[in-house]
Length: 302
Ligand code: BG6
Image 1 (cartoon, rainbow, N blue to C red):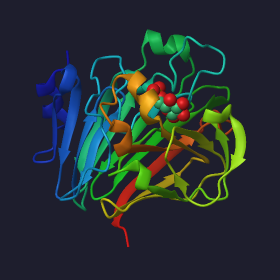
Image 2 (cartoon, protein in one colour):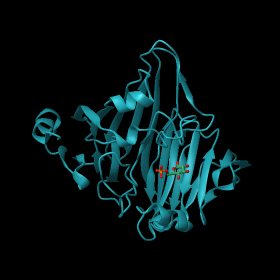
Image 3 (cartoon, helix red, strand yellow):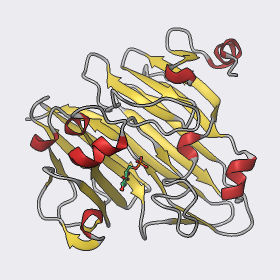
Image 4 (cartoon, rainbow, N blue to C red):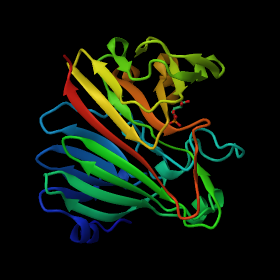
């Protein structure tokens, strides 16, 4: 049982940060400051909602999301770690790693001088996680909530041998109609098309979506821009420590099979995931640190 009084006494920030019980009994942090609002589940260090003050939600959270201990939440910004996609050799291990379904603890919460709020959460290892990942690699999510949202996922290798990880911020974005949305920043990148047997292709121009899309873009380091004429806005995804990007929309049939997308939910979302996926894995030398650091912001669409 989470002791909310103790959490609030130690880490609560008056007028900005409150720990409370959220949907499905999950412990959440509610952040509200002069620049923006966010809700973060301690399970998975999972940012479920974020909006700049006075603006529409930027992050899509499924209306049919299921909230339960040990289950991943459909929507928000799930953290995939320490591997992305299926495990390379163990098919019984969870897809996208275990980080998104286990408890994280609060290390720090404070108000920043510019009015934003800064939080640090750390994954709590257990016998179950150590069985799948015995390596000594503490991982922290350093989250800044304000007019922009920054998530810096920091992995440190405290062992004596090199360690290879994959990771992602598997963020779901809210769009008015995905069929009228264009994603810029991936033109010219090669990609692996997972809905066409993993064939290697090359992107020409912006990515548009009118059917299931599941692609791993390689050599992708530029900002991704999600242009949404319906909401008159552009979402900017600026990343460091990631050389691949996954674009995903399950479309109608797969969404229906998943059972947690809601009716027509797939039309109001697109995942643009800042990843270290496929061959773009990261090898950390002993003592080494990796930052997958992504800043999300919104600008008017001109
Ligand atoms: C994407 C993958 O990153 O995540 C897709 O490329 C996958 O293949 C999707 O379907 C959702 O994964 P999950 O495990 O959250 O249902």
